[in-house]
Image 1 (spheres, helix red, strand yellow):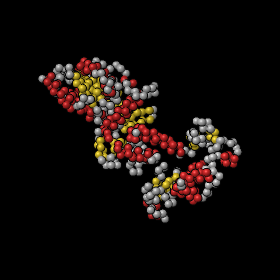
Image 2 (cartoon, one colour):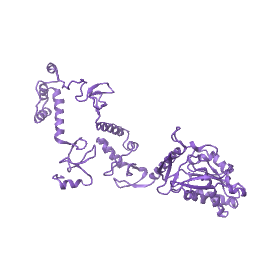
Image 3 (cartoon, helix red, strand yellow):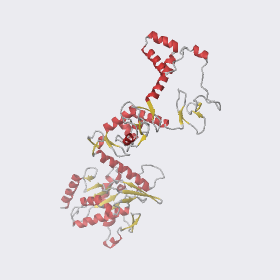
Image 4 (cartoon, one colour):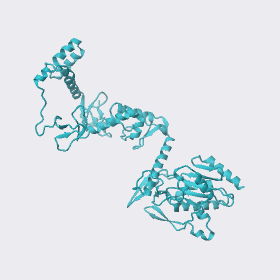
Amino acid sequence: MDLEAQENELLALQSIFDSREFVRQESKSAGEIRVSVELPPGYLVALREGDTLKQYDTSFLPSLLLTFGLPENYPSSSPPSFTLYCSWLTHKQLAALGAHLTDLYRATGGDVVLFTWVQFLREDALRFLKISSVLQLSNEPSTPYNSRETIDVAPSEQKTQPTLTSGSKDGIHEWTNSSNVDTRGSAAADDFASSRGDDETCGTGARDKTRDTSDEYRPFSGPTLTPAESLLSEIMIHDAARRQKVFQSTVYDCAVCFMSYLGSECVQILECGHIFCQACLAEFCKLQITEGNVRGVTCAQAGCTALPTQAQLESLVGEELFRRYDRLLLQSTLDRMADVMYCPRPSCASPVVLEEGSGVALCSVCGFAFCVTCKKTYHGTDRCRPTVQPKSQENNDPEQGNADLPQSLEGMKALWDDYASGSKERKRLLESQYGRNGLFLTLEHCLSDDWIVLNSKNCPSCFCRIQKTHGCNMMSCSQCRLLFCWACLTGLSPKNASQHFQDSGCSRY
């Protein structure tokens, strides 16, 4: 009768839990169950550092491991022998849970109890230990608890079983122990635990009861981490992995295309929490990088300035575009720094950090020392002077012509149009008259500068040049994101931008 009840119970557990939660040893009536403790919303893990109590919001804690063995007279006469281990519970707390598991078996009156134990550990363990809202991490090493520590004691000795009393400090309960512990283990449970060769998180301590587990989970090696800090790191890594797993299996609506996707096909901006499908966010980021607007690589939600992580961005746009983004972002950052200018040597052009109040700069790459005002070779205390090429050199240079270029913008435009639309003979004549350098370098450069002056304005905040091609007069700077009026260059607040066009003389269109 007992063997049949055991077999039915084990088959039921196999049907309820997956292979990661329940593992059965076929040759014996033994196995192990990994229990994920349910946490209430807003659950906190606390770490005391001196007089400071730091608290961390947590949704998942590492599993609690229950390793069991079923004696021949279970469930009619004897309870299962078992071992409990959990990295974030002390031995005293595990002993309290173990004693209560034994009491639960006695309350059944000889019925199967493993599923009841799992329910209790999952749903009521935190409340039973009075840590239902905050878990304070301790530097005390966590060691497994074996049921023989209480089951095998004589009735006259049961009064020395582990008894836990709680004291409260800052709303966090601390436990003390008043028992002497017998370390004898259950043969069936111990044999099964020792036969398990995997290194899963919650079971390592249960396989070696004499080992100090304070260094069991040290993601970062070094003498500076205390056992509590190492445990906190383990909990945070586990929590992040479980959150990601839940995210990937949940369905979300993309905030751009409004289609529904599994989280595995979506990206969540960690800074703001907005979620988009990978295709939409990738297209948005690729467009910004291709157009050179690296400051616009933000959350795709309107008005949100949160940034994707570097890993998210590289995954979305690919290695080549990410390198372009990285290069342009560095360039944009350096351009915004008032104490940085570029080496004037065309073959170098490396960024140079200026010393405050100094008129000289030294390029650390090529070693060129130059004046920060005229960007020529440093001339000491002498005034900056424009470089004038000797006339004899000008006349001997085949690239230079004898005629002077027009001084007006209209004259320059007319000359350029004449050259661009002329025949080969006409172009050759103009080149001999004005020189190729004059036509291709000086003229084109002047026309470009004048065109920028005529067709663009400076941002009132960062002074970047901005061109307006179409649309209304409410503009947004692509560099500093300032909203401003194109007509009067007044900075606008996003909340009352429209009010400016009603109260002032500026037209929106």
